[in-house]
Image 1 (cartoon, rainbow, N blue to C red):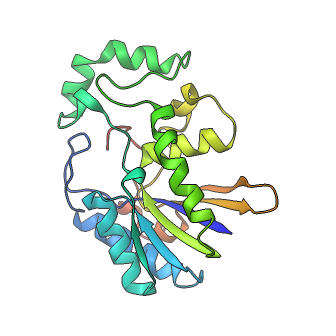
Image 2: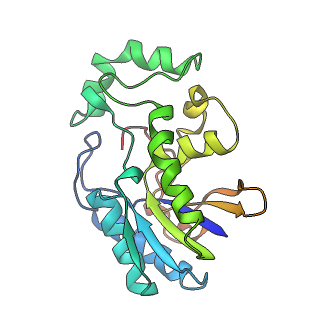
Length: 212
């Protein structure tokens, strides 16, 4: 079974983890991804319940016409006290936290929020549900913090190393896992594949700020 983890399209706000729709660029990213996925025999489209993920999934599914399934467990990591703030304010108020997090000595939770272990506890049961769904290929529209946390989990990395992946996830990029039913293993096949966006470079971020 193939599971495509997809980061939602670009959202219509620069503030941290606000629940807003996609921007025009985000909708275009989702349209291009949908065109690509038409060739992949997708059986279902799953997503988190946040607006940017649902909208991305719905745009993709306009090309696919397959069942849509929504799960709260796929929500973005909770940034706690950082949510609703701009990058400048966050770095001014929480510089010490980000310095400690960058040391990768422990899986630090965001102030008042979650860490990778918290995300894994709620996202892995959804992945297990998908694996048992009987589908062959599934698209899962979720969030950067979820994808990075799941990658560390399935590669048996400590959650403290999530920052290593922080600047390498494009909106509407594909990270593919292969679920091996014989032993229940999730195997990483590719990470952050955004070939479908390459002809429109204005859609690429050229690096990803964590708090989007």
